[in-house]
Length: 381
Image 1: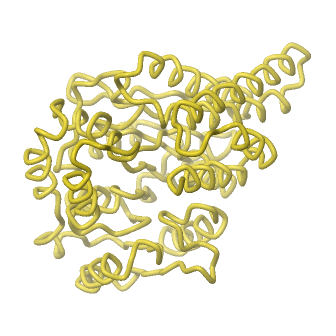
Image 2 (image 1 turned 30 degrees about the vertical axis):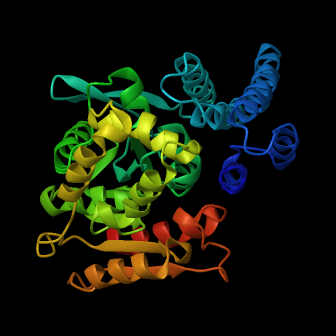
């Protein structure tokens, strides 16, 4: 199953920052029946429980590093199971709690420890983590990191620059916008919205309450659908000094149009990715009637575009575009990028020769983060 193969590669790639072990992933894959999402979930839950137990046993013996590393791996393995569990599955909340719980147990064993956040937002809250770039409280450059549609704050620690940031002396504030995994699991009334500057402004407001944050050196990093949300936010939120996107998305319809055509052609015989779109993703827009709400979804997606905001996207922007996103999407993204005028902007296409052609540079986190943080070092000073 090509979708299983992609996700196995995605989770193995988290080994770069102790989020997986290759042998454990291969052993788990061996127990999965090709194309059978039920066996996928069972296999990953089994591995996650075993590795979490390693962590608990190590912690009892005061072996804190071994415990921390086991909890980090278990975090990923629970997420692998969680990812193939739809909202209608009663196991989903429990698997999510195990996923985030293992990460938080690991976070307590770092020095300084990770902080779990509840960021005030319109009378409710956005979920996330604050990870300090050093043990002191001196102001440091800070990256605000958000994921795309289907990951979590915990995964983004590994793949999205959280661990890389701290290693390089940056603070990392990883946050989940309305509708994203952690925020949605806690409050499913918070839905996707086109005006992304509103939740991002709440995150910046929070960041500026912290003495560890240098207010002149705040950057936003965004992935996948964040290729729309990030530039949209910095078009209006001017306290952000730089923006990085892995995959520029001038219009969400460009990214997702193939999904809708495949859904129509499926005629009710949906694969897992299509079930995820209908029954996992669409409810995050408040759309709970599956295929019957598709026209409403398309109208929402049509409102999510950057055209007309070119003159407002004025902070330095780094675009890291993966070749496997396709020639047409790359052409559209580059045409929009070329309309932006900041002389510090940078376009970087990652290719098969780089070993980083996969969407969002899955499988080569080291190269992705080197591109991102070398550029941020130059731009933020």
